Length: 216
Length: 231
Image (cartoon, rainbow over all chains, first blue to last red; front, side, top):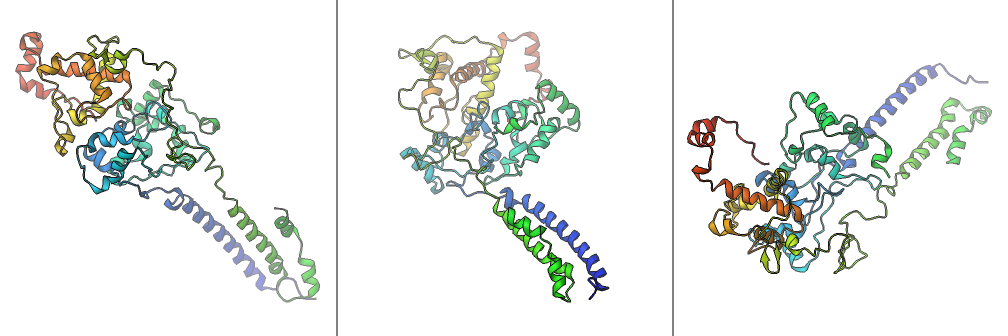
């Protein structure tokens, strides 16, 4: 009866152990990379839109406040998309012949909605509320990035739960004065640890990390 | 799930030994297990369904094929009145009552109201009307026809309701802001417009001695810390 293990089995077993470790490690690394890549998170990818609306021009160039077009962000869960009326407040008078704006004029003439593509698409089981965040001193830019530098809107962050929790666990790192919430180029002071802790107390920010805070 | 686990647990060594094969038996034994792992992996991947992510409900302003206008958020049926929104007080809601612009400010006038007005003015009005209300906002530099300056006798003497009426119903080429600015804020803005008018129309005699000194000493004014520009 032949031996079950030949001498070469030693080498094979050692190498296969190494191969297993390396393979598992590589797969883990690759999956992690994939999960956080723009491919999976859809971040850093500008979206096509019916009208190539440029936040860079309107916010960065003209300095129009976020709330001019997203007027209910302070009051409701949804930040609000501008009605065609909002676009036409200026564009009945300027750039009235721009071909780019034809869909807006069409919408104005027919009353049909413009159909924008949602850039920040949270899963259906997440109930995010804009109003509480902006009223507690979380800047637009903290989640949406430098919108004033985006010719076409794209998502900056992963919108993963670990990303949400990072701030929900440490709000003092990210909170800013309420009157700076809509400022795009806000820079945190060097003593943010102190300022943040003071603002957390002043705004009565609670560290909500219960499941039901966001999931219902 | 049961079958792959059975494959994993099945001991194949005995049969291989019986066959007397030269291939190391443990490798052979691993083959079905490997296949089972691959199968498990494949099953795990097919488990990535998006049902919970894309739930069969509509989010605000979502598109739908169900309604002809493709709006999931339904416009209110004409004549619908929300609680407390009957708007019988037309003077308060539109700035005009019985065709006449309201003369009397309908809310308690406090510092908070004026600050709220400044805040809202800088968001909704300043792009065209300019921060001081001369009708020289940044949009004007991009080709918009100058809106009228607030600092004319006609507008200084206009009743407060005039401004609320313009914000509510629009005027000339200005569209209505009623859908964007709630009525309380419209009144706050109107009050702030009065502040702007006052700020540009103060007689030297109305100033206190201290204030007059400040005005007369421009270098002192320049040394003062600059007020932060409204973003």
